[in-house]
Image (tube, rainbow, N blue to C red):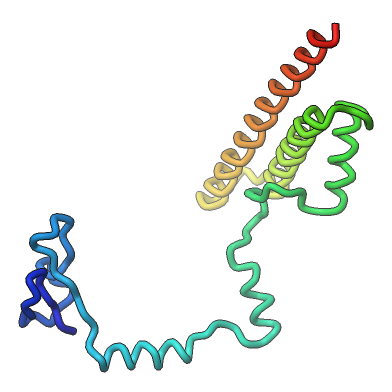
Length: 172
């Protein structure tokens, strides 16, 4: 590895982790690290070997790497949730309502379903008195999702009420 200073002169240092070889924000003392052709060739050769899963089973397993619980998702999780979503919207504004009012009712219903999913996830963690610290921390993290869903629902209800009040004032 060759280290080049900002003025274009090569430094004799070979250690990239040295404090002097790190980039500074000022620019005047900036030192750039340039990989040698052997390193570039080795990197390309290694990249050919690490292309990710190749089998269908490996691809299916890696597809869910980032998914832990689905509580951060904005869309309903299943077809059952779609039916429940429609039921809540129908109870709030009926079948023939203003599209803006229906959009707010959808947000309220989605937030309500999220609250239910978080509470179900908390119940599924169990009620053991002797929980380890990791389980307690994981359960506490669920609070973040519940608070977000509750505040989303509260804001949507306030907007819904404002739209209804505005419609009553303009209709009267």
